[in-house]
Length: 324
Image 1 (cartoon, rainbow, N blue to C red):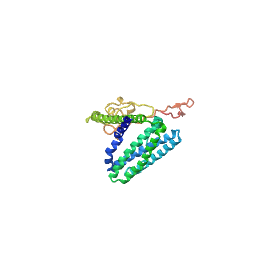
Image 2 (cartoon, rainbow, N blue to C red):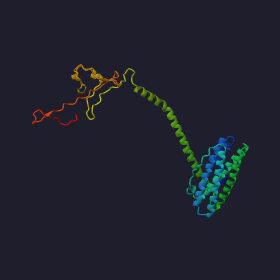
Image 3 (cartoon, rainbow, N blue to C red):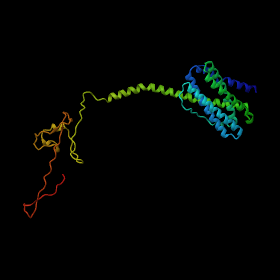
Image 4 (cartoon, rainbow, N blue to C red):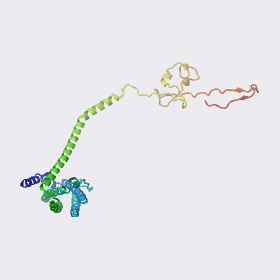
């Protein structure tokens, strides 16, 4: 058993949480903004622990352990309120604390779950002791009092979870197996976080590399699309059809003007004044000189006149008007 005791002591000494707490506690205690962010993380962790203990209380078959798990869950929820309230006093916006958690009771089984709870509470106790001392040295007695109140409950959690070892058959091997499972779980989370950071850096470098080429191609394409300066942009105006459904031949003002005789002009643009008749124009802002041709109104066809046989030309009857 000395070998297992040595492993446990080394694990406590090399605990990443405790090492990180000793490393940054003095720095965090002197900066209210950093302390507020740390307290929000603690509040989120405590609320997640409360959810885990509630699920364990609903799943355990023992009424005594169910009561112990529920009391533990209420303590963790109270700790979350303490940390959140103190974080708001230090300047954090009053947002609701949202936590996520895994159903470790069904994932590990009750025996390994109790071993996990004991390890987590002992680790939290060591970490909170470091922060409580750091805040007292930084003359922040209120935050230190919050950690002191939480520490009393953490010590009780360590004691009751260790008292369940004999009832559930938790051994040193069980604790070591849970420790290895925690290390594997933490390594997976760290690997995902690392790959996420590397992915973000790679995409940032790729965008920074391709952005100048993309801008150059965009400017080059835009310059090619521009029209030359010596090209006239005057619109070409076409004659409008006379009636809906009767498509008339289309011609421009310039082509109509250049024709010499009326016989060469389109039928709907011919004038009754002969080949030299002037073209009626309207000044509506279109055409090369600001004019556009005005098409003459078509003349109605002659109505047929019928003579009755009885009158021999004395009585004239006209048929009703026909639409042209």
